[in-house]
Image 1 (tube, rainbow, N blue to C red):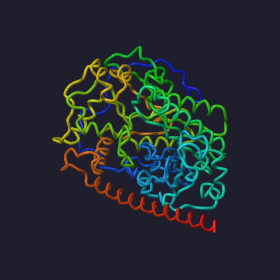
Image 2 (cartoon, helix red, strand yellow):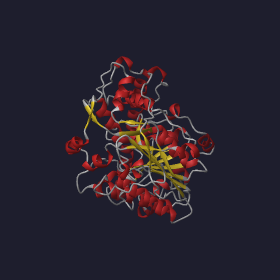
Image 3 (cartoon, rainbow, N blue to C red):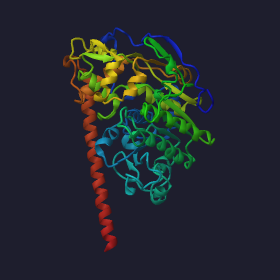
Image 4 (spheres, rainbow, N blue to C red):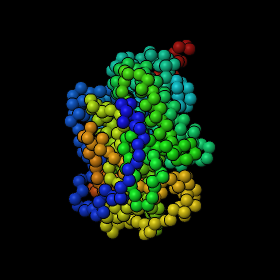
Length: 493
């Protein structure tokens, strides 16, 4: 693979299908439940992270309310770093509260208004007056310089410079995770809902990086969707296609698998921009399906929605014959952090743990909760029937054509070898996710008598902390608004 991370797209190897996820799971052998708010309980710091924590960094994280971004923010805070989190609407306390409630957030987390489609502050859907630093405790800070994220009287110039400039000011590292994750879009909407936000977001963030001399590295969240389907001519049932970082998705377009196309186009654009300069380096992380407990209680995540459908019985009585590769959100966060601080990190890194079949996911859940209310599929749906019914289920037919029946083995050897990354077993990730979502009331617990008390306690504590943080943020916002009104009245007087 070339130094810029762009591989040569070599042939895709094929091997017989052997799922890596265990066929039989002993619930008693699983480690204790670990909540998303305590990321180091499941995935402790790696040596390179420990070394970096001795001299904490200032890190910008884009799209901070997302599933992966939330895990990244939690790990950065747990490592002692200061986080500048970009969000579209910093006044949305419901979205920000789970992040505000994280340990270390009050002291080291600040929010900044920014939008992927905004080239400059004050344009688009984010109001100019919102393009300011808002600490996690809701109390706005003045002054300028590194300690306050370059605030004070620099606001007007910052709005002219760019939407992301304020968040990146003084940062050593940027984690660009923001990108639309929508599997199915209406015909004609792919460009506006997926491709343009993904590609323009890369351009706007990296333009801000170019204007920020303190930034030395950018870690970008891509996806295995950017390597999938490198050679569909070899697709046949029962055969696994082995992918590594040298492969690129050559099939996707705005009309065929538009989500995969958006990830591929965005990552390619990032490598183009990175290769045009030499001051900062780019590393990309390509996760498979991300599971595990989310930091927030949002249900619009595709990962959360999948588990909700599964636990709601929507995979009964039949499921399509499809492969599935998964990775824990806390491993994905660790990969981002390692890529940011490891001196040898370079290029692309596939991050994927166990592989299995889609129908095995509810079957695995049933093993985790014997006798529980989990409706596992009884038989496979033929591909032609899935293709016919796909629109009724909100799925694009091209996803069925190109994906159903094809199994992918996404090799994470490079991440394991160069970063030392390990992976949480699928059974543990799924158990933690089910317990977390059930404790939040998002799904019904499959077997209440097996509910983990620690999950309920963690959910209650997180809810209380989030409520307190939201109240503090709202009160501070109201006070700031009142002060601004009074100041305006005084000036008029």
